[in-house]
Length: 433
Image (cartoon, rainbow, N blue to C red; front, side, top):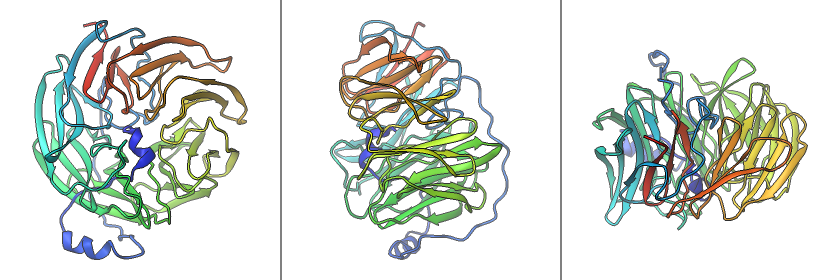
């Protein structure tokens, strides 16, 4: 997400860095591979139970870790705090300790920045400008701040497309810049902009950009900002998904869907563990996983849904179903898959067989990805309405429907009994004090 509206229309994100002239020379090359660099191994990241450190949450599955969130709210009911966010952005907030971090962009003057709020009060703690000027082209539905940041608990990593490159910056928890890295080119045909979010795993932050005719995925060392590796993912049309790190079948994978395929990479060296075709050319979301399988969907020029086993072999697939999501990601619960596509169709599938249990039309259109909270799914539309329905294969059951004043593109998150929703104008903390 989302962050997600941009995934539908935009390009993927990477990292910022030194060596502008070198990158300008490389960007014209057909192959964007960079050799593996051996870098110091870092200790595993440690997070509090109440943290939400990255896109799709602590386990990168979009599950609320404690399974509790409010079910009723409005502009005047059950709002713990509400803070205006300057500029415009579709990135999902992250939570680290007492801090809530989002990215945003002023379109006049051109400025891309990160904002940190106090988690308890919603008061702004700091704001750090990362880029000024040189905004790339984008689709009207996109923003110039659509990639969700991430944190390893010591540093905050933010990603922006600026000029014709993707930039990642590391900040300390007080907003001071630690390093910057430019990791690859951005642009090409289409001009939809950027929307891919960062992923976190091992010693690295992972970033991708699958612009038409010059796509890639890269690993950046969390401490030094050095590029550990970069792998070419060039395709004719381009794709807009975000990478995730997942444990499936006892192995850790960096997973990225796009350019007609799903690819599993080794985290340390970027070697391809397996690759499976079967998707449409353009993907604009993230792979979803349970303990033994993974699920990917694509939306252009055809809608396709692909279920894979842990070794990359095909378990089942669906084609041209109008309920298959394009910009929003799937969420898994046990043996079921739940999804809401951009046209407002919600559906539930059996994860093992691909059997569709039910399909229901919701009102409005959706770029935000659904969130699993206990036994319920929360899905937000572009009109500011959040639908809550049962995560059950036995049929669609609406639990509640709540509206805020402005539209929602970012995905909701729920931690510590509170629900955090970013609209086009404000960030809300929903729940009792």
